[in-house]
Amino acid sequence: MKRIILIAIAALQFAALDIEAKPLPADSAAKQKSSVVIPETSIVDEVIWVVGDEPILKSEVEALRQYYEEEKIPIKGDPYCYIPEQIAMQKLFLHQAAIDSIEVTESEVMQRVDEQVERWIQLIGSQEKLEEYQRKSIAQIRRDMRDDLKNTLTTQKMREKLVEDVAVTPSEVRRYFQNVPEDSVPFVPTEVEVEIITQQPRIAIEEINRVKNQLREYTERITKGETTFATLARLYSEDGSARQGGELGYMGRGSLDPAFANVAFNLTDPKKVSKIVESEFGFHIIQLIDKRGDRINCRHIILKPQVSSEAVDQMKARLDSIANDIRNGLFTFENAATLSDDKDTRNNRGLMSHVDEASQSLTSRFSMKDLPTEVARVVDTMKVGEISKAFTMINSRGKLTTAIVKLVNRIEAHRANITNDYQVMKNIVLAKRREEVVKEWMAEKIKRTYVRINDRYKNCDFEYQGWVK
Image 1: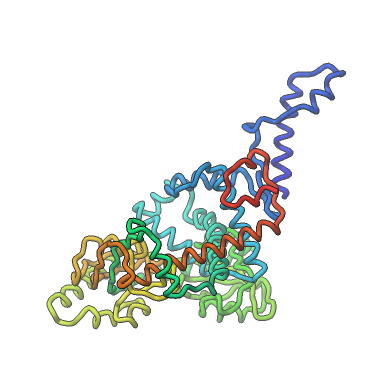
Image 2: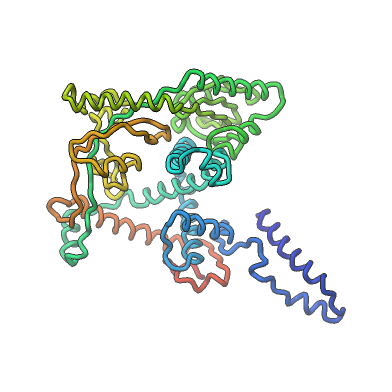
């Protein structure tokens, strides 16, 4: 609210300066002043929607429009109608999520942030190039992404809760497709089944010692009173919590990495800094803020040791050697998968699987878009039964790893049929049913929510007509 007031004051001051530059006769000053209209192009920012007690700023819409353009995300119709409505819908989901106590953990958010940053680095070539392109440091990029990704994850969880009990029967699926013209039957994209072996490149002990020494230096500076924990977190912590001075917010033990939680929950003095803690995400120091029952609020600084190019090359060479032994019949890919660092695929003899978004069931079939980008790029040109050369990829924890894959099966793209593609056809009907439930919920939510829209936006062709009241 303070920001909005300052924006309004700035706009009025701009207009006042313009008026004062041309003095008016005393008898017409009051009349002229009352009819002053501030041009839209002169307004630095303004509130264009209010949803509940949440404002939507013109600058938010413009920033999102530019992002959509850069990422080539399709926009339905006028962006200045479509985007504000999308933001408003997210605010309603977030409001309901707060009522229903739906939360995402800081570790979930940070994992998504790290995955996205690492993928960008892989695509653009290096961290330095990414920083140059974004005109920000890596720490700033992570901080800027944190809130948006947290809101996105929370919205996804809220949508999932709304439709968790929706189901369809086989007879409903058959009835739906009986009336669908043949050329409207869904086209099933190429699907593949893939086995994978991953090996994490070893981090040099010198690099680990460098990170630990840096954290010890931070601890010493804080203890001596030279600076505060929050200040150093903002400057140096390598995750999105840096934006909040390292503060994670109130979290339960189960939401935190076990090693991190064991140390954090044993802290008793807010003035003390913890020992160095190693988690699956990196190395931390922690400072207690407050405890409330079984939840804790603390700050942390995390530093992540970097993997050297030499270590990556060594691990790729090792995996290439394993692949050659498999090709020569010394052992099978499935047996070799017991050496994989990834426990999920290791326990499944290397076979990759994922939860299908539509059915929420586990499957080993992947469309190319559902595979990790690096795996899809390699598999695309492979033949069934072939084993790849070693390559690098970002794993589910956002860390650089090396891998080899085997293409187990490929189902070429085709028109779906009820015999072979029942699950695909069921997913389509289920998705439609779930979308209907969400739309009904949204329409009802809009009716019960205060909404105010700037007059310039009232003639938009919205997806939901209840916005204008």
